[in-house]
Structures are given as structure tokens and as C-alpha cells.
Length: 55
Image 1 (spheres, rainbow, N blue to C red):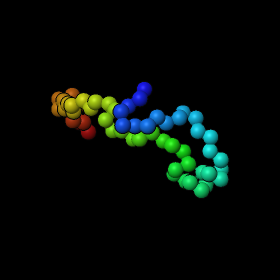
Image 2 (cartoon, rainbow, N blue to C red; image 1 turned 180 degrees about the horizontal axis):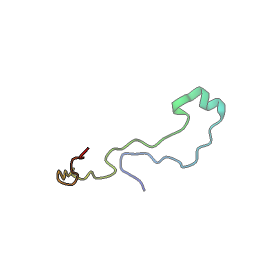
Image 3 (cartoon, helix red, strand yellow; image 1 turned 120 degrees about the vertical axis):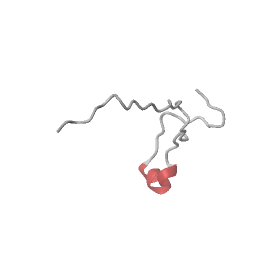
Image 4 (cartoon, rainbow, N blue to C red; image 1 turned 90 degrees about the vertical axis):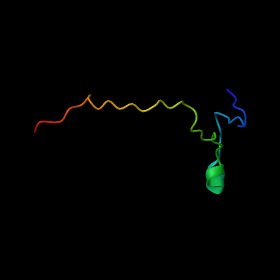
């Protein structure tokens, strides 16, 4: 599944310990974070669903 504007990221990435220590965050290519992946439902409030506790 290719999204427009995003480069494909390989599923398996072999990185040596030396590369991981030297490059740190750039040693492994991660997919871009996207917050628009799922549609958010409208929040519903049902005020009568839970009553007060009679303690």
C-alpha cells in the first residue's frame, strides 16, 4: 500500500551494532507518523447512563 508523498519503507532492515551506535535515530528507517489514519467518531455523552452512588 503506497501513500502519496511517502517513500516506501522496507519491512526488514539489517543494521550493524556499529551503525546503530553511530547513526542512532537514523540507523533504522521508520515510516512517517500519521494521525489521520483513522476517522474519529463524534464524542457522545449519555448523562443518564450512570447514576450516583448511594454511600
